[in-house]
Image (tube, rainbow, N blue to C red; front, side, top):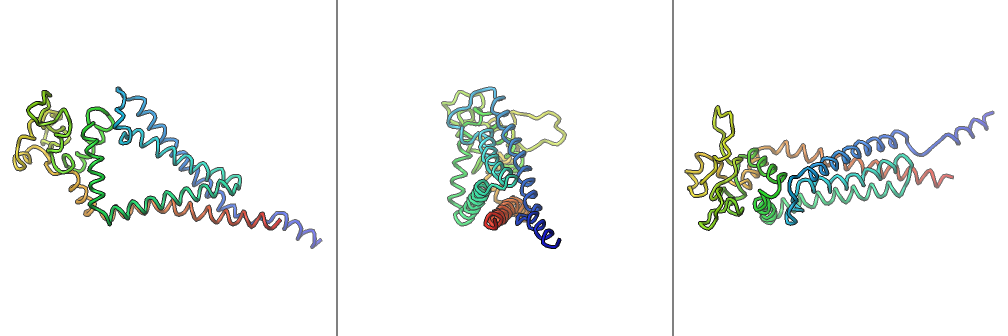
Length: 269
């Protein structure tokens, strides 16, 4: 009787902890659904655009960035979902390796951004310059630039005269545009009690000096404003960084534990 009981225990015993297995599955499934939502939003934004995107704006197109991020997340989380559910070592290793590469890439970017701040600023400056140049060519890009300038209370990258990079706002005498020497309305300081936004509030501002421009717009560039924002919100930046890193570390650790348990299970029989 005791021998039969021991045999039954041996048959039902498993090295794989079901709590770890199903937690990793639901963890991956949650982010898998989130990745599908990101892809759907990106595709919808891309399809709904009124005009075709200029080729030069492809890499800075918010819709394209959403689609790429969503597809990468979908692949990684799919491997985690199916790998945990089916106890598939190859998929779990792919999941773990992919998460590790993403995490190390983020660490490398943070490291380079901190120790090579001037080079990072120049690289971001090129990105913003391209966004300013194609401000009128891509509606999503236009909305993104307007949002950044309104939230950070800034104008351009270095200062408000950067908007001369755009052919519509260019401040040369040869420019026939009606918006010559202007800046977008998102650069303007809000007027108390104004019910309707004056989209022409930035017209002719580039011809003014810094002190005169300061009366109607935010003349400071977004580069300096971003640095000031980070310095004044270090706790929030740290919390966001930790919130981004912890799920990735948890996924890597859980997948490695599950892989080890599955291998023990295989070697025991």
